[in-house]
Image (cartoon, rainbow, N blue to C red; front, top):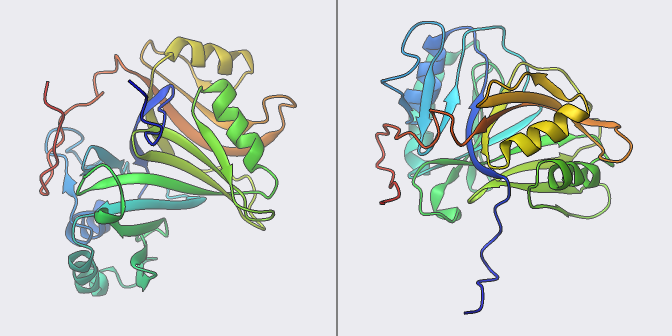
Length: 274
């Protein structure tokens, strides 16, 4: 039987699970993520006052209390009913007055910022494959000009991910598959630079020890292998070792106890049936 050439390959990164954003107060976080976006606070994990996990389909936002730092890019959120989200965000806007919250309709999406200025662009889920009414289909990072090709090579050669470069000169972007219908996107942007921040993304990977050892050999591992999780943050050119971009990745084994755990959502989300 001939293979289906329209089905994109999934590499060693098999599931992009969460975006972690530090916030200094959970009340505005509840207003924005729960009342506004219509997501669901996880009722079983991190239910205290120091952290807050918010479910978005099969994925999450993690919101630990701490000093907020900028997100060098934009998170894409897909929702079932974009018009309802817009109405709710407009309703809560007076309660977030004085914060960095914003919301405007733009090209069939909602360009929003959290009360701390993190950019979240809300899309209609109908625009994405996978038939999921809620998801975080991709995160776009703003990276310095001339880095997209090297970033794509980093993910292909060290993390064993399908990664392509699209766009013309001066507007190139690296597209990295990190799970079915999930991507990290690195958009070359004039004026973008490498910055330090306390935010991160979390992914699950096969070939866990092979990836860990490849990064460890280059002294890129920042949190030691704990048998089921390690971290790195520097994305470098595979040949020269030149720093191209910096953003922390929480790398989890498929043996991690959180892998594919069922998540409670107010919008029903289908799960695979054995």
